Length: 501
Image (cartoon, rainbow, N blue to C red; front, side, top):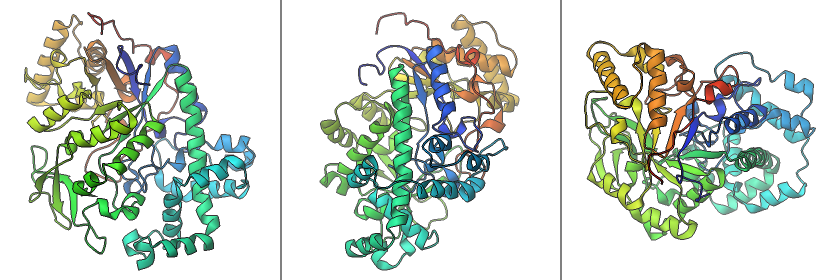
């Protein structure tokens, strides 16, 4: 894949699998996904960016997973299961959902029942499944999920001591006693990865490549922490000692408490970053390009005492810096990473960006604030970066513009008009025209890759926003009502660069 990445100008679309249209309550790896690939091919779009494909946990966030290497069972295409005689067409009818946005409560109450029904008809002796199980990659995940079922969903730190501390003898005995339950969770991962690899191969063969996402931190109540407590700052009883967050800033007087356990980087170093190297290997098994979330945390990270009410009294600590990436690349070769370098940066982050050479991110929604040195302005965008109109954490571009008022609106209009004139673009009046104009600016930028969220292509308002950081309860629910037309995607044409790359 390395030869294709960032060697020529290209465009991509940001659309998570969950947001695909369809009849069963959430996007899947089925027909609509293949149709979207076909549309991208017809329109000359090279990249499809998705959020983490992991099984979601608390809050339904793809950035809080029960296992960072898992696949989301909700994405398994039920119609393919029916084609394999694991479900009946009449049973599919009862899985249909007429609502618009994703209803995770409904999914949780209904989808696993259907998947268990499919598993009851599945031959666990078939050769490819036996090979998958023997590989052992998801053994820990399956045990974790089976133990969750036994203890009514309780966090692993509340399990009986022998299970909490993952004692080998206890786990061996538990597996023998609950083999069917363990095999069910292996079955859902087998089906997810079988369907995903089929879709990815279909896309790659047609010149479409996937950009995925690897979060910096993992959830506390996860397989990652349960089986590797030495790698995290925990107390002897495995409760959290230090948690991640960000300090007070312009947006929050008390900072942000993320609540994820932070790493014992000294232990990772002693083990030559083997755990992270495996995470990268798994990520590149899934995706062609990987966006490293919260890249600044590899240089320095902010940690707070577990149990603190705010992030005010946290401290900055040194991260692994370039050592981690050197160790991973020594085993895996050059990593096709995009560094998510947004937010407040310092010299250490800039140095790490320069040392690794990974492309960073520019977001045009941040550009028009009146600061001529704003790094997100088109004139300040270099080739070695990825230009976005917005990300999954931003308001939609149309929604953002509609929400501007007073001095912010005046500045935005003035700066956008100035940039459009400089770039040889016609004036844009009104939120719809301004949205389209900013999309064109992203595509005209010097950045080798421009990625446009599907909401911005469709000029959708704030109701279609994917996530509002530091909130819960109403995120990750956006879904398309219908397939994106070729007419919409056809605007994603990159002009040739002024000089050869």
